[in-house]
Amino acid sequence: MADTENAGLAKGWAAPELNDAGWTDAKAMFDFGTVLGVKGGGVFWLRKTVDST
Image (cartoon, one colour):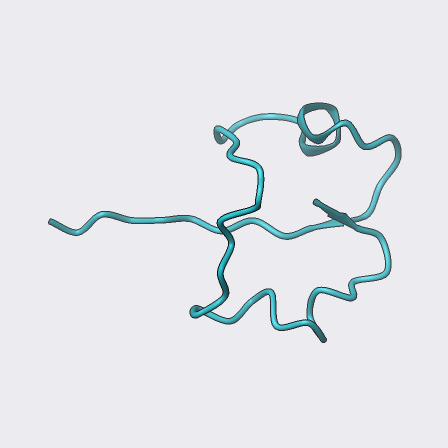
C-alpha cells in the first residue's frame, strides 16, 4: 500500500501486533511502485514474517 503522506506511522503500521492480513504479499527485489500499481514515489510500508521453527 502506498502511503504518500506517511500516515501509516500515526496509524500504528509499524507496531508488531498490527493485523496485516489485508496487505498485499510481495517478493523481495522488485520495484515497489510497479508491483503495487503505484505511479510516482511515496512511502511504502513492508513487513517481513520470519518462521523461527
